Length: 224
Image (cartoon, rainbow, N blue to C red; front, top):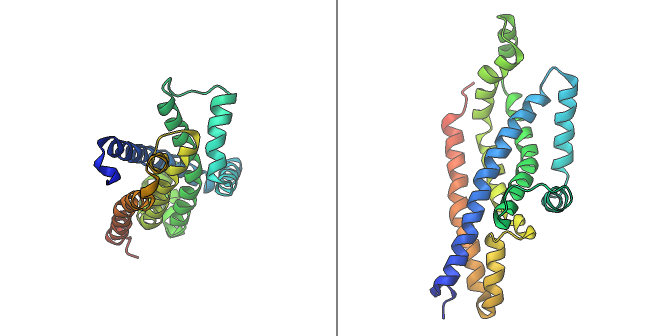
């Protein structure tokens, strides 16, 4: 009997990927916002901000994501009492979003900073010459061009985030990796078909997404 002929198993499968989708969307938004702020700090004329941005990137980029997720659960939730919801699944979801966001933001920051470096320095100098502030120069001239230059790298980062979302299952969220484990435990004779179903779903979604980011990068590339 096919494991996915049982509606209950289909529900487990769908629920797992819905959690992955929610983690990916929220984590992407959080990482993008935080990453842009960190990139601005890294190119800021204020030494303290540059130091903070560099420290954040070096710490989180070199810390395993699993440890960060564990800290969010055992540190923020269990020890410090931080709770985002009374519902355990939703609380674990938000803890996972925090962990994914702070971790991925370090990579987003470096991608955006590399894009900033592609913008000719003369443009920033011209902006300062006509009286624009650092913030105005960054938001109105530098970041719009830098963003178009790093669409492909950001796409790779966010695809990695989607796959990394499965690590949130280590703190009990019933996302796809936990769903796959539960189905394998209940249907030990169909391990291969279950694995192919879950792996195939990731491939079907993420491979076209990668090509889509590549097409968008070529379409919006800044002509120099």
